Image (tube, rainbow, N blue to C red):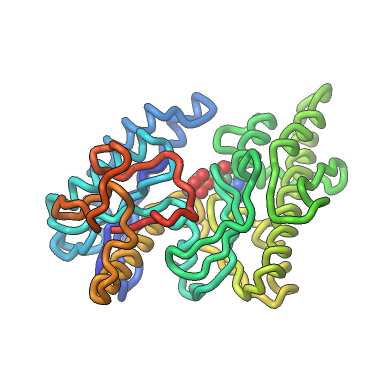
Length: 369
Ligand code: KG4
Ligand code: ZN
């Protein structure tokens, strides 16, 4: 089974081809970061327009690199949400049109499901069940993953996401958007102990996070001081240590609470080297093993969408042969032939594209065909 995956939830246009036997066959990506940098963040309308420009050439590139003829593609998967609604709609409209023209099913994929399954693209993938720490620009969640589509949120951020806190603090340090990776680089030259920022929510039980106060603490540290290289590096180090400590301690608690033997870290902040090192230690101390995707598949990419789409398509075919078809389809989802799947009536009007700006992961109407 071979699936093409299309990702357009934010500022990356990405396409990949995944085969259930041969694995990832190709992936192509265009990052809009340079375009948005002038504005200090993503401009949604510009993002949507650029996705429209990039999609077709990237599909051609991914197909050519994979050596796949278009009649060898069994499904077209696309990120249906969460994300910027205009950006999602460009990908959804494009993907569903492609699926219709090719006579193959269109598969809606939850962006966060894509992130947390991304380690399955690697040579030694984790098996289910596992604990996932999902840390991206928009989300910070600890998720109990029992199997495909069986997700339970154990804890999440009450305010800023970890990546958002990295980006906002990086901006204060004069780094261009998105500053997470650059802040991590700056922190390498920082002195330990000059700034000890609060470890939010560690003083109380539970698995919730809060990062907005940390950003304010960094602002206070910078106030009234000349922003020289030494200060910037020291603040970056203090900030990163506080975030890493918090994420690691909550992951330790979640491992203990669930008894899971596998810990997965995914999402853009999962590329952070210090975080990976610390989680490796936490996992070892807890008798668990740590898994993460290669760096380029931590941030947004098409490979994770193609993989998730392929698993979903396979599951729906298995379900259909067992007489359980239609259970994974969300409201208003159309199948490749244009008929409403599972007989479920649309509950929101988006012309059947299935795109949703806000979409909780632990919702029953998860990704599906
Ligand atoms: O998963 P992602 O590509 O997008 C969302 O789905 O949100 O994550 C992007 C986030 C940005 O906030 C970026 O600054 C952060 O991941 N990021 C990092 C690193 N690389 C990317 N944060 C800390 N350290 C890094 N090395
Ligand atoms: Zn993402």
